[in-house]
Image 1 (cartoon, one colour):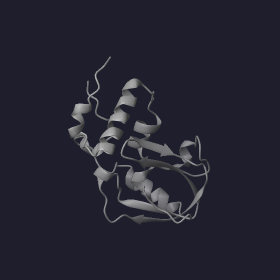
Image 2: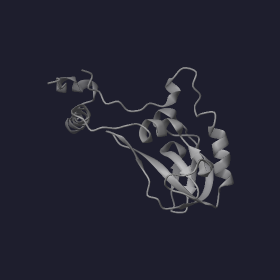
Image 3: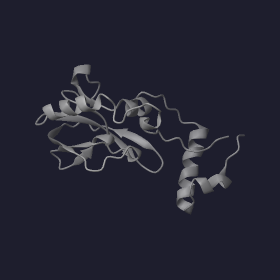
Image 4: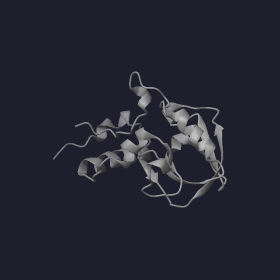
Amino acid sequence: MDSTLKIPKMPIEREGCLWPSKEYDEQVNYLKQSIGQDIYLLEVNYSDIYITLSQIGRAHNLLDVIDFPSPDPEKYLYPHMIITDDGRGLNLGRVARITVNHAFMPEEEDIIYREHFMLKQLAYCERRLSNKSIQRASKVQLAKILGISMRGAEEFRIKDE
């Protein structure tokens, strides 16, 4: 049984795949055209154990879209970031979707930015709580508490019953 935690990897790992996607520049232009408008964010949150999406449903005013000085696909840091009226600068690698007019269930024309890979991996994928998923998360947490790298955590391998 392979009990390692599967974290979605960036599409750059696939041979012949461009990073960012070929639609990225067009979407950044849409964002720049939307400066001054209210936008709704579907944010990606990373932790040591899991990746989640969060959406509060409150509009933020888009103040600017600026270049990010240190893009890095391994860290999910894209070449641009947005500045919102709540004082945050948010890298586009931390955003799964940006919409106007609707926070939830937006129409296609209301979507001005989307990260297809994150949406596919996190939003549109069926998830089920199972013994195996609980075992994986517990193993990662235990290794972290004990200060053991995941490679050194092989002794915690849990056998199928």
